[in-house]
Length: 637
Ligand code: PRX
Image (cartoon, rainbow, N blue to C red; front, side):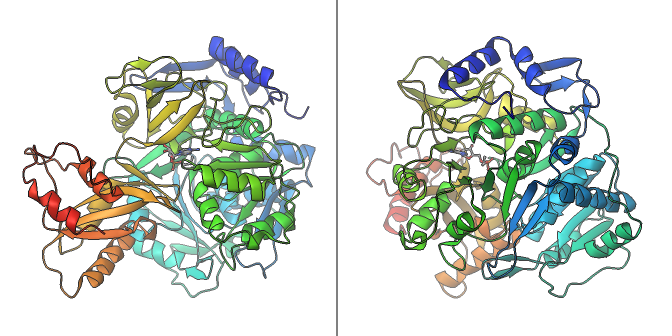
């Protein structure tokens, strides 16, 4: 068996799970034996959730890229590591074998080193979905620098905030990127960001679109020129920096219930073991399979299940630059057909959007190669689940509904494809090592089945976050202080009669729009930056395709032309400050917001209004001005 810890029967799952609870250190120690270490650990686990302090494989030394590249180069140099499918189907796809990827990573590691990058430096990566993005990530890991990837849809202001928070000294970007019929001027966006980021000394620019860009002397250099210099020297190897198990591997910013995104920190050893173990078990990866995760590497799903999970398993990872609906809604199915994809991992929002096009785009596409389907990012509704099962999986492919978060590093709750049973809309069972508990409002653990509550985890797993960059206290208060000795996920959850878990959605002020996390406070701050806005309140409402839509209630002091024009202005402001992904779907102008006497906005009422649940608004008598509710209802969009 290629992966000795791969669980292939329901009984083996039970055994592994039990062992992971009874003797976690032994369990993870044995799994960790299967990786390449420069030095093994002294201790498997040290932890307390109070500080919090979580250390896995203390004392061990490694470089994650030796596990993702070197060991596979020795064993299977010519196996494809990355298959890349471009945005435009007319452009040729590319395949990088393990040896090719290895050499490119080593060369770019040398470029980074030659441009002053050192172990521990933070490097911001703002790139389109091209193989060089994966190469840049792995090159950072090779030299021991900490990567901070910023999704290509974020604005210059968002990049600037992230660069400043992490004090990055290098940015890796591209002239531009293609997404559907759009060209995104990435370098220009970076230039705007860098006007306020003196920490950045070098910008390395890949040519992708060929659009003209400004190149600043002594700061901006072309990727291709740098690689040429390295090639001239004949360099295609790079000695990996030997890292401590708990050294930072990367920072990934994510939104929370407060205004500022936080830099979730993952470390080398635990994250490696977790993404690898979950990849192999949840998807039941078999050597030779082609794994297609449709996420962007700018999000955690791409980090864990395009790059680190698959590559650490010697797998073939398919990376797609474009969008599911361009040039037409059959794009995913063409890719499956063309590359004979075996595992397809996507988001419910994509499924719902494709469902809307009916079955025509699927006709004539051979989807026989698919063995396993996966979903991630948000609760999947029954209708989408069954459509996925029937039209894509042809009722013969298990669907894994994988619940996890940026903070968890990898999948925590999911069925194992074809091994443990699926149940529509349920993530089902925890992976070995994961101890979920449901708690009530007071923080009491709710025992038994057929119950619901707030989802917490009571024991560390190797892939969990270690801190929030530069602000450990924020990590403690956000995740470890709501309930004593528990990691709080921010999600509501139901446990059915059989002990299977169904995630019902966020219970905090975080929206999940098309599988993207958007903090309401962050969005309100952005809207409030518009000159005419006095105050705003954001809530989510059910949206057929996005899962949740964004409803903004805005107090505006003077609508200068007409309401629609002002709405566009507000959208423009949001696009500038956060990015187009955070644009509200609905903006309602109001003269006041429902507030308590102490000035707190009663979001519960606004949420009900946005959802159209007008009968049952609850008690409004404690409001400062109950009449404002009537006005909001009568002008509801
Ligand atoms: O609310 C849960 C939802 O997405 C949140 C995490 O978002 P993010 O950190 O951006 O990571 C998304 C990709 C892992 C969770 O708190 N979520 C994620 N997966 C599921 C889900 N909700 C229901 N079912 C899922 N399978």
